[in-house]
Length: 243
Image (cartoon, rainbow, N blue to C red):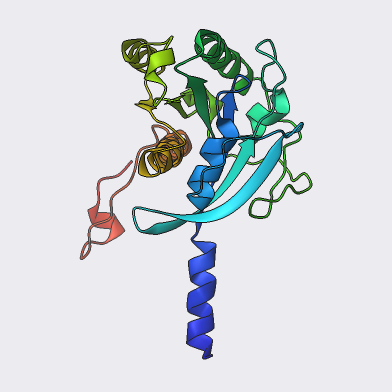
């Protein structure tokens, strides 16, 4: 392999976008099924993991490779909220409820407020990276998303195929998404591949939007209101207006 080809590979790797997403939801809403559907396109209906798991995989978003690090949370009951550690680690959040479970919808509404309150309370020790579909040890906190701009979120209603058991209407989901100012979709992890993938893609896009706003805000703070002296080609300093 030529040196030019090696340099090209290095440039490609260094420019790879990365995003850390925490998938949050009450027990039994199908968080693990959604994650596996996104990462592998396969559907597995039954999971019995007793601890959080983290996955890492490279996925194309609009034709560009993105390294997704996804945290599959494992809260034991509807009173358990994500820890400060989880909130600090994540760049964005996928909030999941089941259309067949009113309690899970109420949990999402409460956890949104919890995240917004905690996101700005400081950085701590973060969660870990992981190999594809394999839990791995902790890593330092990441996320260059400013909490002052609000954490990027996407609202996802799962089990849309179980309409005969519906407890939460589509309109209620739309109203909550409007309140959150975020993307919303109803899906069935058992049936929808593209729709599930699109939800994760939307989290990444929201994170990227916040990152861009952060860079612009930082540039504004650095420049402030400093006056800029303009030099015109062909004129000497003596020909320019004096301060």
